[in-house]
Image: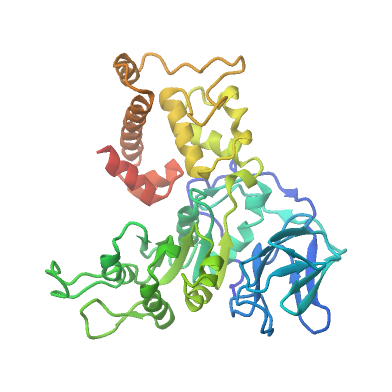
Amino acid sequence: MIAAMSSGHGHGPFDDTTSRAPTEIAPPTKTFTLTQVSGPLRLRLDESLPPRLLVGKSPACALRLDDPLVSRRHVAVEIAPQSLRVTDLGSTNGTFVNGVRVIEAVLRGGEVLRVGTTNLRVEVDSSTIPLSLPDSDHFGRLLGVSPEMRRLHGTFLRLAASDVPVVIEGETGTGKELLAESIHEESARAKAPFVVFDCTTVSGSLLESELFGHERGAFTGAVAMRKGVFEQADGGTLFIDEIGDLDIALQSKLLRAIERSEIRRVGGAGWVRVNVRVIAATRRDLDRAVQEGRFRDDLFFRLAVGRVEIPPLRRRQGDAAFLAQRFWTALGGQPPELPPEVAAHLEDYAWPGNVRELHNAIARQIAVGEMGLGAGLSRDASGASSAPPSGGDVVEETLAQDLPFPVARDRLVDEFERRYVERVLAKHGGNVARAAAASGIARRYFQIIRARSR
């Protein structure tokens, strides 16, 4: 369902020969198959497929079962380097491994997985060979040297070379918007608009108007015709962020817009043709949302032609230290190398806010001399607290006011953000896109910081 891999790659700010990770062979990842015990069905699971696949009756499932006791989305299977993780998706009749009901289980091969009345034997392909990882440490502006990220580069390239809708899944702060921008910038639509619509920032009464536009007089306050984000993105890409939060009443209209490439403005009588590629992102478990009736199955099926999940930072071996150094350099940290007492703790922290939290932590470390992420992260090897930078006018003035710690910290971070935005914009001639790229953050997030700093 995804077009062939493109031959070109990269025109972002990190495209140079010095920003390459060494070519390496990843540890072997087992290839598994699910084979119906008394039937013809067979599903092979390897790294050429998305990391998470579904088994059930829905058309969205990789393995569809015609079994009245199987739920539409019954169980998810996820391949790991040496195992297969199965997760029951709240099915009506449960998931069983060797006769024992499970919510989640890690399988090594040889087990029998039962869903409904269907038995699937879990088998390991003994001919599995090591996977050669790409030598790049980035895709567009999405950075990462970990095997977990570099394994995904081929998928990213195939998505960029195609024009299918895409769903990007992942926790908050993993870089979903950066990936969407990068896919757009590597695609044939790169010179056309990239428009962002965040479902969490628009009130329910205005959602339809923001998506599809409105005619003059359509409602109180509609003093002129206004194009919605679909028309604004015509010819380019529409990124719908947090689509899992979209009101279910609007989901059918969104489905029609994607399927038929046409929209109708609020208060309008006719249909307007649009040529838009839709990339959606969510921090929510859409499989569970569909199961619970909060998200339309047909919309999910239409969007998830291309589906990719960005792993959280805690599962990306080596990326915390790599990204921290990149952020430290980009933000003007001194000395040029990240201080050892800071770097030593990066891989030990769980980073619940993921890459965004890491970026903000490094910015705070530069501004006030501490990360504020818990014991140890702001201390040197002897256990003494790191001292804030001396001689800074704002730092000294703020400290002299004896403010509560959170207030003082926020004031300094605000000042740092203001100065940083001014500096990077001046360096790039006021061009927001180039300034955001050089900062290593999404344009929308850069614009949020810029607006907050004014």
